[in-house]
Amino acid sequence: MTFYFTGIRSFPKLWKSNSYLGLSSSHSYLSLFLKDCYGIRNQEKWFSVKTMSAQNTNAMNLLIAKARCVRKLDEGSNKEVSANSSHMFAAGAAKKRSQVNPSKAPVLPPVKNVIQLPTRPLNSEEWDKLKEEFKEKANFENWIILQMVKCHSSVDVAKSVLAWVAAKNNGIVGYDLLVKYLYLCVFHKQTSEIIDVYEIMKARYKRLESGAYTLLMRGLIYTDRWKEALLLLEDFKKVMIPSKKNYDDCIQGALFHQDVNVAWNLYQELLSHDIVPMLETLKAFFDFGKDMKDDQYSNKLHNILLYLRNNQLYPGESFAHSIKTWFESIPGEQWKGQFTTIQQSGQCLGCGKTVESIHLSSEEYEFLKEKVMRDVIDGGDQYKKTTPQELKRFQNFVKYRPPFDVVIDGLNVAKMFPKARESQVLLNVVSHLAKQNLQVLVLGRKHMLTQNSRWRRVEMEKMQKHASFFFADNISEDDPFLLYATLHSGNHCKFITKDLMRDHKACLPDAKTQRLFFKWQQGHQLAIVSKHPGAKITFQHILSYDTVVQTTGDSWHIPYDDDQVERYSYEVPTKWLCLHRKT
Ligand SMILES: [Zn+2]
Image 1 (cartoon, rainbow, N blue to C red):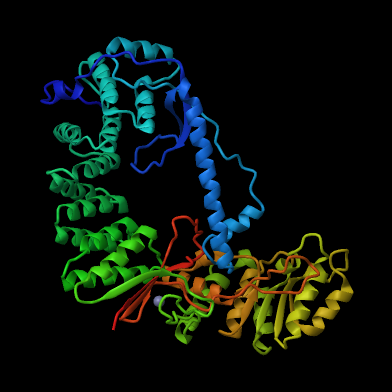
Image 2 (image 1 turned 30 degrees about the horizontal axis):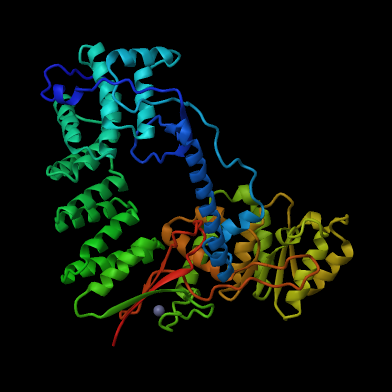
């Protein structure tokens, strides 16, 4: 697609460029990571950006060394946090586990496409000369502006590329070049340039693609013509559902211009599309609500908190601060907030109240049990996991035995210490549990019964006196049996495996069931923390409380993500915001 510049009002203004030769060969380069959040395609994630001339290399090295030093300090603080919270679902626990066996992946990616970008606008001769230097590039114009986008070059320099291209092609500039130029204008918040490009696009194209729409909305929302961004959103909706970032831009813009109704309407619309809003969007509503005495607005903010609860979402640190500030600003309600942690018993260290239990109610338990039985165990792909005959054999096996207290994934547990004999390790665990008079079920494979160096017959026989065993075919998957036996035994029954069963969670049909599964897993999965095969068997403590946004009316407890801790999706935060009303 091309664009004809002749006759456009803003041509002289838009394409006027200074001429200046600003190239030098003594530049150093630094690899940076570019987050492609603007929808511009064909961007390579890794790129080189010119930093400073050679004499500054030492200063740069010093900066890099400093950054490393800061990172080390951060890692130190992570360890402290993790040490305070030893359960396996605690935020940062997976990262800590992975640091025991760090992957050998290189820290820095290879540098590619090293180019010295001009720092000042060039005239046509200079662009011709530069193009000659890079004649192996098939489309130099597109390539160079892409490099500028990646390095966030100044708008003036980018404009000189467009002026040069327009001069060569009778005023024609390709659509792609124009959109990338727009990206730079938006990035540098050059409002008048954004409006010029917007006018050109409006005059020339009936409809744009999503990248240009997104950029124009973002660019216009903080100008006097912000309502036109909403018209663009309407236009966009005729073709596709806007992204959460599109809604975020428009909502933030509406709040910036004090149009609360437009902001809430857009928010409702976003929810009606089943889009999970960005946390930034939700934070913006809290920030705007400060010192506002409006019950309707307050109710809506309470609904946002309940939305976080129902979707098991957690605010980040700065969002948590916004929530605290908003509560404390409500006139006449006397809320007091504090950042705190929850004790193992479930008691809040801030106010002393006990937070919600991790245990599922009997309705929740029955609901989850039914879903897991149907979707994970005999769901459509049961033949992949086991045969119907084997499943039937297992179901009968479970049916004619009293409920179990602990179900063990035998193979998984036996392989806990790679150097120890598998049957010995499993025997230790089974004997330890049997001594406590627990009804134990071990799920195993038929090959365990074949005497060899890893599986001793005498140890297998000893175990079978203390526990029930079910031996599946060697090709079966263990997890469905583990889930079935545990859920069938009842809400008290725990299970032991190192597996985090993310695959099964993914099989579940909806977010509600997945959340229940996660809650059940946190409350029922036992993890062995013994360091070596001969050591006394000890289990990691199971959280007794549920990490979720919750309220009792005159108090709120809100878990939040610490900026310093990287949390995996199957972990929960360990920090809380405790809010209560002075009475
Ligand atoms: Zn509290």
